[in-house]
Length: 459
Ligand SMILES: *Cc1c(COP(=O)(O)O)cnc(C)c1O
View 1 (cartoon, rainbow, N blue to C red):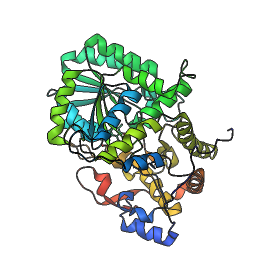
View 2 (cartoon, rainbow, N blue to C red; view 1 turned 60 degrees about the vertical axis):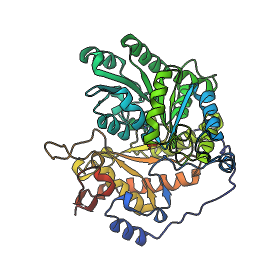
View 3 (tube, rainbow, N blue to C red; view 1 turned 30 degrees about the horizontal axis):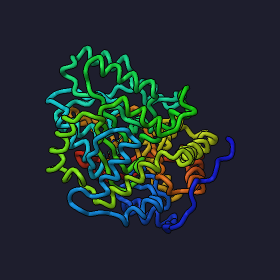
View 4 (cartoon, rainbow, N blue to C red; view 1 turned 180 degrees about the horizontal axis):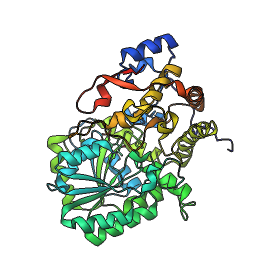
């Protein structure tokens, strides 16, 4: 691999982190019931739990914070955010929300009638929950290759367009609410969707008269992948790719905690449909707040207005995606099975292959996750059968198609030295992987069990 360029920023403020001793880590993880969600952040050295809201804001964003206008109605920061939305995304109407799920909560009841299907490449978990809370049915139509971790495919987030068309055809367009394109496809490992595929979705939507809504959390990373991997886009500016992507949609919901590079925030944006905008504007008031703040303080809207513009700077994206590739390549070089190619915000370790001796109902990815904390104070997260839970009818553990350890990289927070610590630790664990043990519950809550469950190793 050619030598990477240095980060396109220098550091003006630092936050201390410390590595507590191995004995302390072993005590802390027992106290936490072998559940990384129950650890205190101060006991973690390198925190790769999520890239959501964990990014570092720039001096420019912090300066914007001081210009917060906390007027209840008509804050200047709302108009700045509206301008950024118009410029970067190309949509006319903006309604801020406190985060992505707030946007889903406001928009979905307007678009879903009872029992209708919502068609997505792959629903993010809160998105699926909001579809179901509004009495819709969430359908995933991502290509099959997304589930084969070793198969190299440049756009593993793509819709299977044949499946999309035949699903609508078979179930009747009147039973379909709308189509969501998730960029990048979070649940498939931060995998991008190609422009060609987005155009294909638009064509099918037009054929049936359905709306297309982007789930836009990682719009900038998706655009960067299009530039790097799709013919015809190599010389285009990121902003032009972002605008072209969104031109094929009617509206979007966004968790701004990802590519918006803010610690809290979200939005609904609408291309030009004034009637939809009017409905959203009246729905947002009782749920999130008056339409010129939507659950955000003025200063937070200003930070987001600036973050939207920073996220599409190409040297930043090159550095960010390059860092994830760097970590991924170190693991690949050591023979550790990871999802390929690496996606936009995380490296996913394939723990079915890492610990083939641990069955799914003893949570192989959780075993690697716990070991990584003990080894180096690094917190990752299990995305597998522990997360998936039990079948509501049979009460049996559901077997997840993949057992993944996600190492999620916050934006502009860690250096490559931190990545080396993570890689070195995993390589050590890989060498003694046969000794890792599975887990069983000492406490198992009924819903969303992975957040609060307590575990013990099976001796
Ligand atoms: C994070 C995320 C959401 C939910 O957003 P929050 O800001 O966490 O409420 C929705 N969709 C995708 C694809 C996400 O990554």
